[in-house]
Image (cartoon, rainbow, N blue to C red; front, top):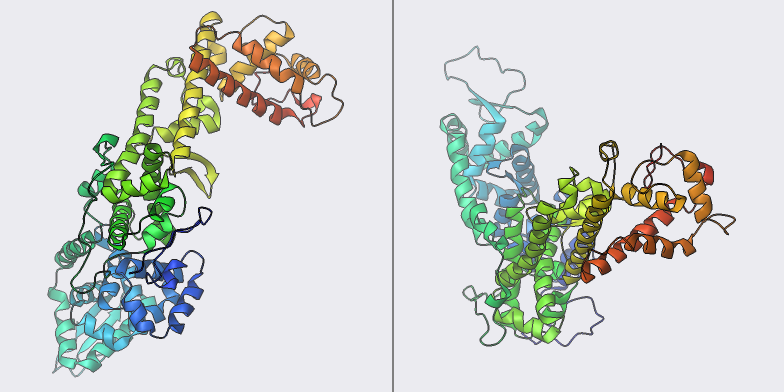
Length: 567
């Protein structure tokens, strides 16, 4: 293989050898499913192109094209690729999903009828038995029964065995499939249908499940109890920084690249230090090892996440989860030095680098857990929601079994995976600011105890306590957290907006007053916590200003006020 050229730091794609994977893989993320299929069909030798795809990459392509549009791809594929697809598509954990199995058999049958029949009567015989037994009712006509009447809905191919599809929607395909089997070999057909009654579905399913697990284990889909070991943290000291590179034999007979998936690492490592480090790996064997290990790593994550039939979005998600923890390890240990990061990848198993990255995140989780046990807000009887949506969900995300970041319902999800050291440091700073704010409220309530009525208010948050306390100070009322009246709320906003005649009311001059008033109460906090608290108070002020900058004076007494306790 040719050695990859050095890439421009601004290029957001990983370097590939000139003789590397076909363009349809290198441009996978840029092309739509229909474009990918057209590229394959326009190739000089499309069958050779598809048959040489690793089974994992073939599966990604099939998912992108779509189940009902990938018939031309299925027609070009080999038996191992068919089997890999079925292993992932027709199982719901440890049980076969009957409807999915029948649907995929129909697609294979439509794509290549002769080959599908040969496969079903050979390697796929157990699946054929299982599907037909679950889908058909069988009646036998005795030779001397001259008064036999064909029951409604039944059909026959030999005048002896009569079949009825249990699901009327699947009847056309079952009639066609059984007819094709009978046409290919009537004795084989009669033996098959006659023995359906004696077959035990649970035993067949168990046997197929065992064989499926053996096949998938070669691609990293290990049993859960083994797959979960990737989430056992590893000390950074366990990694080799200098010395001999890790060696893994990735060859398979005369076809060294036959089992080397390209897409998982290509799609997962689209950003961060991993992308930059991979661009510096010039040894083709080392690059193949990294691709193979990364694909296995992503597949083990899929097992741990409990994914059954995986959609393309899930495949990409697992790859990016793997890349995220690897990014964290590389960036924390090398400071984004691309050469050092590349050396770290070459000299260590990728799983070890992943576990070190996960260890950094787990360490942050432990900080959150240890603080939460002794935190003031817990002793005061509050839950995470006391900190408001963003802060409360940040804390909840860090406390998950495998920590995640609060995403604010971005792309329909409340949390997202860590993608690099910047995420880790951002979450660490946010947690430190929360710890400082908790300490501040602890000191504040020691001086001005929180009464039971205020503490039991529905929907009470830290913002209510902080800004009600400050409002009472600005209004010259007694210090504490008791509710203010609507008239007092209007007076407060009139004072805060003094000198401004129309919205948006920026209240710029009051920001410094707020920070000075509140930080005057922080004598008991250490220097680091005081700095963190000041940052958090500044953020809270911006939230307050943003909430009210366009609210007329007369509306500032709203009943469900997000910042002030108003009677």
